[in-house]
Each structure stands twice: as structure tokens, then as C-alpha cells.
Image (cartoon, rainbow, N blue to C red; front, side, top):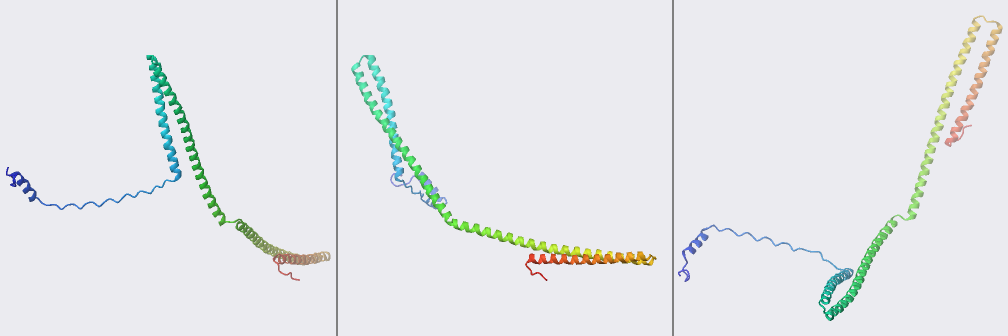
Length: 265
């Protein structure tokens, strides 16, 4: 009773004292609020709304068709049962009800066919519109690329490339022609020097043979013959030297004409 009139009981004192004697813990800070979820704004176009309405109506017609089929089957069973019991007037009423239901079911099926056909037409139109958009974007990009490389610029580039190739070929031909002329002149000079050395060696041998024949006591006929051979060799050498000089002059003139230099007299 003391506890009811403001006097605490012993158990309450113990519980209160134990709680106050305990160590006080600081309360943990509340967690930060979660950031609000930002959802992307969804825009529904008129085409999407029309397609949604058609699909909703199609689903309603299908459910109505299923209920009508089930009710038709039920009315058929009821009419059979009434005929079995001999209640022909009531069976006739049920059959009339079933006939009316079947007429409504036929109109429902026709409406369902129309809705499905319209939905298919709308989907085909959306596909055609997307194809047209893709074609328009492709044509725009193609026009931009064609503007970067017009036909006249391509023709000019091809002409410039052909001219550069012709110039390169002409330079290569000139370089090859000049090198060939220099090589021919160098070869002619080497051959002339070799022939001159060979002729000098032959003349020296003839003179040595003539001196040996005269020293060996050869008769007047032998001496005359040797002298005649020596004179013939000298004449032949002079003629060969003149021919070589003329040939060298012709070759040098040909090389100068090939290089565009004036020909010496």
C-alpha cells in the first residue's frame, strides 16, 4: 500500500539505485539521412498511350470471351438437365439465353480481331517510323562525308598524282640515260688504251726482229723483205690509229648530244 501513496517500494529502490549507480554511456549520433532516390523522368508519348489502351482493351475482350465460353458450357449443361427432367419450357428459356450469349460472343470476337489488327498496324507503323529515322540519320551523315571529299577535289588529286608520277619517271629516265653515256665513254677510252698498248708492243717486236735479222747476215732479199714488212706494219699502225681517233671522236660527239652539250668541231 505504501507504494501506491508515493512511498517507493524496496524493489523499486533497488532497481532505481542500480541504474543510477551504473556508468552513463553517451548516446550514438543518429545516422545521416539516406539521399533521396532520384528516378529518371519517364515520358509517355501519344503512340505509347494509344498502344497501351489497345492492349488493355484486348485483354478485357479476351477475359470476356473466356467468361462467355464458360457460361455457354454451363447453360448447355443446364438445358440438358432440364430436358432430362422433362421441363421443356424452362429448357427452351435456357437455350434462348444461350443463343443471345453466343451472338454477343461473336461480336466480342469480331471486336477482338479488330483491336488486334489495329495494334499490329500500330506496331508496324512504329517500326516503319524508326526505319525512316535511321535512314534520315544515315543520309545526313553520308551527305556530311561527301561534303568533305567532293568529286572535283578527288579528280584534282588524281591528276596531281598522275603528273607527279610522270615527272618521277622522266627524272629516272634522264638519270639512267646520263649514266649509260658516261659508262659507254669510259669503256671506249679503256678499249682505246688497250689497243694502243697492244699496237706499241707489236711495233717494238717487229723492230727487234728486223734488227736480229740484219745482224744475222740475212741477204739483200731478206733485208728488203724485212724492210717491206716493217713499212707495212707502220702503215697499218698509222691507219688503225686514225680509225681509232675517228671512232673516239664519233663516240664523244654522240655522248655530248645525249647530254645536250654542243658538239666540238
